[in-house]
Image (cartoon, rainbow, N blue to C red; front, side, top):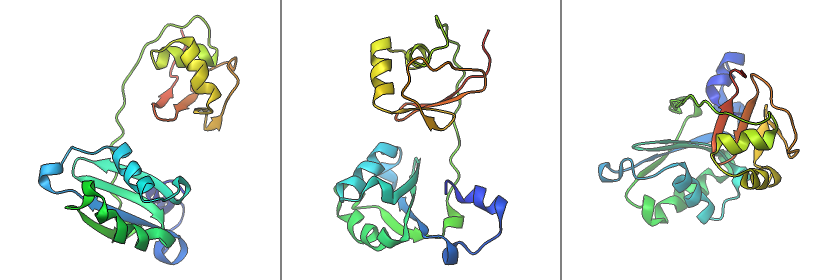
Length: 177
């Protein structure tokens, strides 16, 4: 399940009764606004010993974050997250999944020139790195084309392909000229 807004479109249900997912909201004090990113929230949860598989989407905002987690670990998170220095002054609460704040998706247009439409060549230009580093990223299984993990350097990229590089972003190939 990716995002409750999409689920509402499919069927009108009582989330609490059917889904094992809840939202934990972290409200930062004013002096800490804009200080933390997605990485900081995820790092805090991992520091508590929580496996990544138990954590869903993390929506980071200037004033805090909404974190989707399995309900089975919510009590643990609520009682232990305040023990981390970075969140000790924050208000941390469990909220209904229907109240998750929407995150504005930032988009940027890039124009790149590649010698071929091979995946390694495209990744190299998108990330502004060497072909060797692009190959390394692909071999680390951090690259997805149309939501499928791809480890073949020679995969041909086409118009409208959606390329996701874990930790770097998502890119849509709009047009090939």
